[in-house]
Image 1 (cartoon, rainbow, N blue to C red):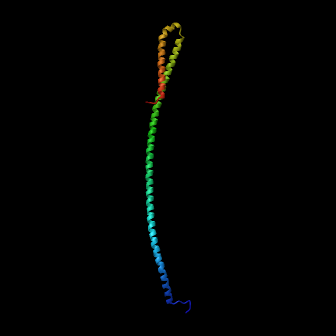
Image 2 (tube, rainbow, N blue to C red; image 1 turned 90 degrees about the horizontal axis):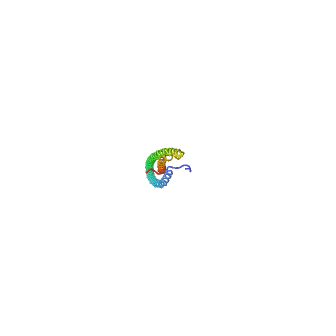
Length: 162
């Protein structure tokens, strides 16, 4: 027999020798497979826990956003209410000022008329003075009363509504 020729017996011995060697590898592969299976289970468990945590965080953000939206809506509504109240208040103050300005304008016209009348009376002769003394005194009293009213109206214009 030559070197290149292998008998069935030799081949069977080599296969047995390889089988014994592979038995050790098979055991190592089984241990490794068990370890990988354990790691795979741990990985799946961790993945599930992370997904659950992510869902919880997302739900928390949704609830927080809902609460912020609710607070925003309430604040917007209250701001609108306050703005409406302020506009009504300012409109009332504007009407009051308009009324006071109208009264003051009328009183000022009346004072001007009285002063014009007084100036005409002053031009009259001494003889007429005796006749019109009572009218002058009456007009001076009217002027005093009207000037007091103007002062009171001006003072009340500067004071807020009570």
